Length: 146
Image 1: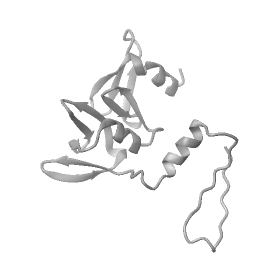
Image 2: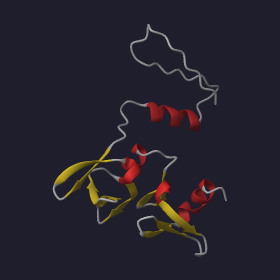
Image 3: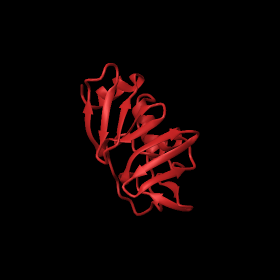
């Protein structure tokens, strides 16, 4: 991919033009990331207070009993969005879905253990342990370069 930036005082706001031979997944991803209507902040509720959560502070986000929770160093927050909506808001280079009910922050992973039959054991830096479901093992192995 080539990137070119032209500075011109006549523009009052940035303009992005994508030149491509065909619509690809990469082009769709770029469009999605540049979209104004795709707010990147996540808010959570803890002790009756709404807090803006910095994605860099997240260890994992999971769905359980009809609620979506986000885990940070400051504790656990209840989110008012669905898991797939959280996944869309987060940087796909840093956050990855490991099961139908969980997303992890790759920068907060302490280790992956591939010794389990059909799944991958994941230990996060906060001591939480979880598993990659069989459905997502291939995706994780690709991300890890295996």
